[in-house]
Image (cartoon, rainbow, N blue to C red; front, top):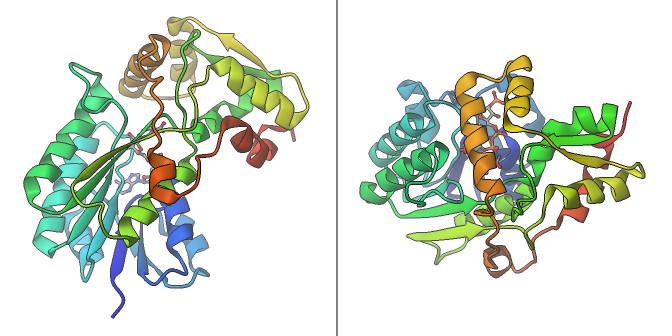
Amino acid sequence: MKETILITAANGTVGSETVKLLAGTDFRVRAGVHSLIKGERFRPLPNVELVHLDLHNPELLKVALTGVTKVLLITPFSQDQAALGKLFIQAAQAAGVRHLVRLSASGADAEPGIQLGREHREVEISLQDSGIPYTILRPAGFMQNFLLNAETVCNHNSLYLPIGHGKISYIDARDIAAVAVAVLTQAGHENQIYELTGPEAIGINDVAHALTVATNRVITYVDVPENTAATAMLQHHVPEWMVNQLLELYGVYKAGYAERVTDAVEKITGRPPRNIANFAQDYQNHFQPV
Ligand SMILES: NC(=O)c1ccc[n+]([C@@H]2O[C@H](COP(=O)([O-])OP(=O)(O)OC[C@H]3O[C@@H](n4cnc5c(N)ncnc54)[C@H](OP(=O)(O)O)[C@@H]3O)[C@@H](O)[C@H]2O)c1
């Protein structure tokens, strides 16, 4: 019988790409979706079934994990993501999961690090202590985060961020999904931690340049002060705890702590990771004014 792989947060950036790549492989894919309506897009895919999954709800966890041998555990960027991750690991243990791949974050083991990293490390430790064979993926910042800047790129030809001249080894989420698929479907990745990055460390000026080329409009990076960024996020109803965690993260970027580049994507998938020009080209329609 085919093994079943559960993907949590399957409607999200990494989860949705992973479901698409796994469809058509020799595995049965269970897409754990928080919103069933959004998950409908997966219905036409071969070997994919939908399950309603709210990580707060132990009953739904039990149902979603029935008959599952492998999992990609993704938790939303929420205030309680450490608690949600740990609750899920307990449920996976009870269900007899044989391999759990965890989407963590770069810098999770930094000391003292930042709040977001510490929360990810808490989940990593709980997984490592659980006895479930695991693989931990620690990706750098996602290129897809720039989709959140699409509105100002479209309306003002500007990318506003408080990152100074910091360089970041941004990774395309599609490459994280490709790694997740390799790790879930091939042997030899148990009890490993992989630091995943794009091919180079780039500044936001480089991102603006890639968007300029892809959209054929001049896009400019505007380095804004932290408090201006905080005010704008609050005005856009970003909750205060999230604003604080993002500012901490931007501080790490600005200070140059997110520059490290690894060759893990190529080693694991056999293909070099996409660069920012590839990302800008593939997503350019998001950055074009309507
Ligand atoms: N963005 C980055 O640069 C970055 C870098 C490193 C690590 N990470 C980590 O990546 C993870 C997020 O992954 P992502 O960006 O792929 O996700 P995402 O696009 O932010 O999507 C999160 C998904 O979580 C689902 N969700 C919300 N509440 C839920 C709940 N109570 N139970 C179950 N699912 C719920 C939502 O589902 P519906 O759409 O169905 O409502 C949503 O699609 C976080 O742990 C973050 O720390 C992010």
